[in-house]
Length: 279
Image 1 (cartoon, rainbow, N blue to C red):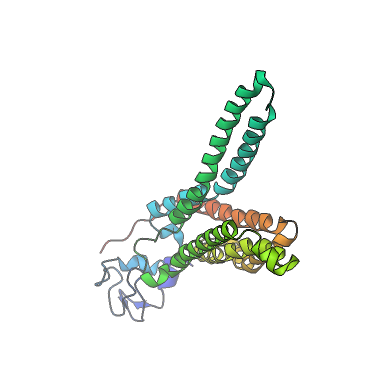
Image 2 (cartoon, rainbow, N blue to C red):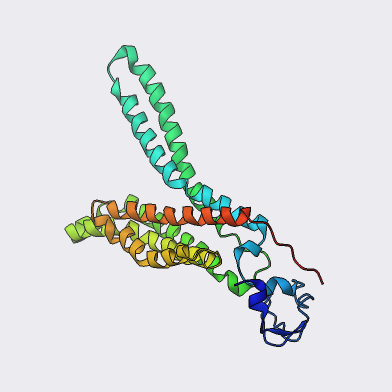
């Protein structure tokens, strides 16, 4: 629906005859001229009449959230590469123990590789949190109530990070306590808990992607995001029992949604920007 289609029926001549909430502050614009600005926040009324499509959003903000996705989706690769290098470095540093000719060289090379791998492992949470924070940057000029989905996406990540950290501390302090107390059931719980920690993030992330996708010309991404919430949550949690395949599938699904969102944002950014009509 175009801005003109949306505005038809809301105004007679140049004056709004029905209630219309300002996109900037939710002030009721009833009775105001469509060529004027909101008396509460100063946002041009024509921008509200255009609707909520992202092609009318702030271009700098679109660039920020697009770059946020690019950083966020790097964390699985940093994690896997860091683990790989860490393992290779450890193996190299221990491969030539007792062989005087190569022992020092292997140990030095192994230490260097371990340091690089450790650095990548340390960068993983930074990429995860920093990228997501950029992706969920509040949109300028949008009403506070409309930003709630962005806040929930940030809270979801915080809950996931905090619960995961608590689980790691619990495992470090009480290693094997669940298994010793509950036997095999405790072992199963140990597998499922890390996946459950990820559910708040994956669920609120799908909601946020759905919100953004509903403002894009192509509505298929919105449908995909809504349908992904329950399957991804199940794969991330109980899917760990299937030889940990579930969380991997959930991660790939999550990153695929984000990549589609980024691709759509690039298309929208390439569109000719529409300038506001001044009063």
